[in-house]
Length: 547
Image 1 (spheres, rainbow, N blue to C red):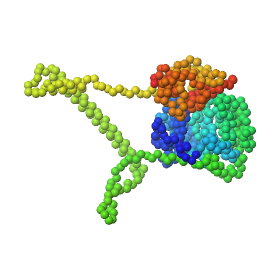
Image 2: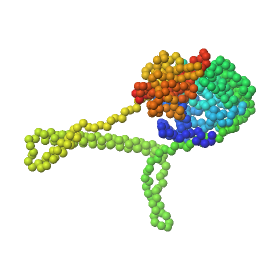
Image 3: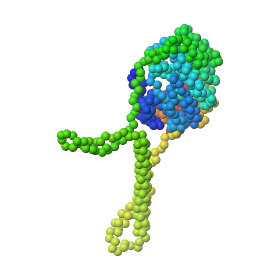
Image 4: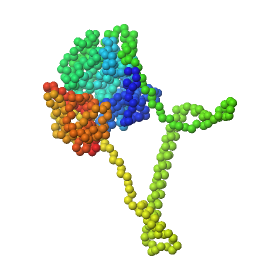
């Protein structure tokens, strides 16, 4: 993982080149909520720019929640968190910038080298627990702590991504009644869409530590509902863990939130088990071994430079004639750069104003000329005959009449290009065997009369629509849009879509007979044939009407 090409991808045609003054150097990744890019501060510090999907940004409730989360995240400071340095909830679209951490995620490190040794797991638990102390101290519950949200820098772990966290003093908003998070790392109360507290993050920390020690999720893989069932109703099997880790991880995974260890207790327990290595600062050596070679970060994108003609000054050479060479230009001071920017802005304003005046004057000249032609034509029509001595009046009249007809006729106007339909976002739409989704309003239906239903047989579940066609996208996450969905569904005749291959982040295109286009981005999939447990999915839906 020592090559930039393994971590960063080049910008694509539909990627922006700048975000609020940050010049983008590469794409880091994409997900259901948006895209992540590499950029740099003015001083050259690498930052991760997270840009929200435009259709989500159209939802006022989402913007309000995003603003609350960004304001809360600004208060988080700590050695083991990726600090939020900038954000704009009112941007178009909203975005935020965090310090970039050069290192693999825990999930990537385990996939590359296998389970971590016991000392590394203890250092990991101590660092993440300290990060949770800072996060919880700012009034935030992370809600999605997992191996992919823990980055391994050369000097220790960093907890990242508060993208679906909520400030603990705010309501659930659009997420009410929905289990938010990743199933393999949810707490029992989170899996049942119950009250989530800081203790839920501790449960996720225990699962994350168990993953680091085992190389796989403690509660196993498989359909989401199966995993959630085991989390809620089964005791975790800790016999496969190294014996020295079992007591501490067991305290993190207590079924009752009140019985779980606090982050401060976890830090103290890890230091006790590490012994003299904790006091001697042995962590960096462990992390260098686990994280591997340092990631090569692409250089900042240079600012565009203007071409300026420099004065020529004589520089004598001996022997020979005088040679003229450009004189070196001294570097601009910050104040000179500010003056130059102000001067450039004034010049641009003057040019725009002058252009407007020229166009206005030209328009008045054309109108005045047409008016004079019409007056001459009217005078010629009322005149009793040709004026003596006015040679060539007939031909002149014909020319004038032709000009007048051209000027006074109905002008030909070029057709105004039609604007693309506006996206209508519907975040976190829940679909079960008891309700349905309508493309037309109302979108959320409590009956089964909507356009899209969830139907489950003895072995699998599928999306069914009697009115609309459905197509699954197999491109990279975040590639779904109006053009893509319109093209793929135009010739489709598919009215059923099996959900066996669907996972969080999967994008599904829908075309209604009216021409409306919809995009479903699956957030949670809990469809599995288990007796007594409901089947449901949650998706962010965007509808383009009359597309």
